[in-house]
Amino acid sequence: MGRTLNEVLATLPPKRKAAIKHETARLIEEEYSLREIRKALSLTQDQLAQELGVGQDEISRIERRTDMLVSTLRRVIAGMGGELEIVARFPDHEPVHISKIGDLA
Image (tube, rainbow, N blue to C red; front, side):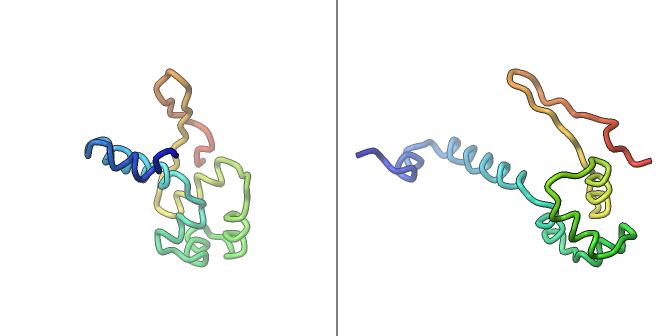
């Protein structure tokens, strides 16, 4: 019978365990929906709607979308006080930051 994940982790050096914990937290943080981001910032749909000059129903629709224009996403993130960055990752290359896509006019 093989060892459990907890048993394997218990044998790792503290530095390695810390690196795994840090990377796990980073990966978890990268996966948030717009709704989760808004809630984490303690913003209501009404507050964000006011900031963007739209109705609350529009924010609800945006949060349910699975696909949207980059300019829309950039505008919503800006409305929450953030800045959208788009990064492409390729094997054996450094990440590439993409600019001039969906810029606010």
